[in-house]
Length: 282
Image (tube, rainbow, N blue to C red; front, side, top):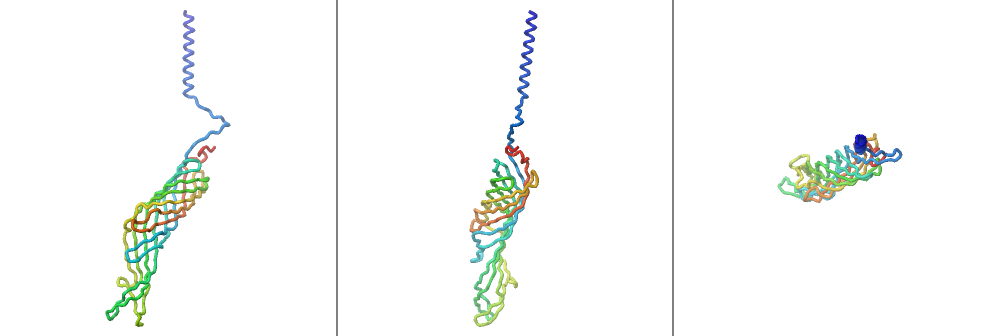
């Protein structure tokens, strides 16, 4: 009996050893990849950066000033943009991103017009004569622009983007000046007289200088963009590109006036992950 007890005890101890061994093996077991079989490492690339842009602002539609028949339909000016951006990789070639920037949307324009103006004669009578004036408009507008987009990247060097923008106007002003160009006229009776403006001997009068009323805020639109990415290092690119903002809404609720703009831009982008491990590259 003692002999059988010893055998049973040894068997039980051996079984307990096996159970303990396999349980520990199961906890710490790992799948070892074959040294000749490649495996895929999925890493979604994330990029951040900044940009500076320079280009033109110009109008479509017409802006009616307060004076009768004072219509500005051809205004433009160089503007600039600066901001930050971020991009996130959705698939090997598809990215989504967003830019946040400051936009200078200022514009200027002029037109000349001959107006029939009453002149006071020395004898107290009035006579209407044609006088040449130059009207000038100065739109001072700045905004914060939010620009989400989708981009298709052919390779690291080139990508095409399409997005929407919301321009939140943070300051605006419209200044309308009128300048006398005709300095003298010959009256029907042959008398030559000099012409002056009462308010300013130089012939300049400010008709309006005020905040733009009834602003559409934010102004919405779409934009296409092309990027050329020049590799500076494994994680840093120099970005050169162009985008064109096409407005869908007017500057104000009571005018048919829109602000178009385009920019050539320069920037830097930084990869937060190693490009060599993106989407199964080995």
